[in-house]
Image 1 (cartoon, rainbow, N blue to C red):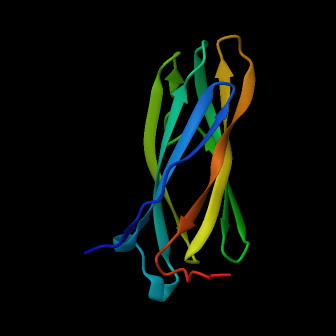
Image 2: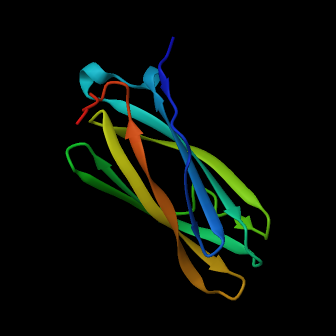
Length: 138
């Protein structure tokens, strides 16, 4: 049976836009013996404010256990640029591989309101931990 590691959600709110992320280690897609570790992460973006906003682009910072940083920038998320009216939410699932059994992801979404004002919304830093990462007790 595949091992699933599912921590508590990570959340951050910027300008009444809440971003919640739940990472999940994918044992069935990983090959630890080959230094290949894969995670899925589910993101929910909630518009808790009074104005309609559109997600224009994303900027991810992915750091592995060796401290190597990989940045990903691009339009939208999973090929979409969702518009969120007040009270709306949007969820999607994506994933990332690492060459180490743990890492950290963080980033921003660039949003635009109805007045054409663009602003960044924080994606909370979240931990990518596999069951193959040794736990150190201090």
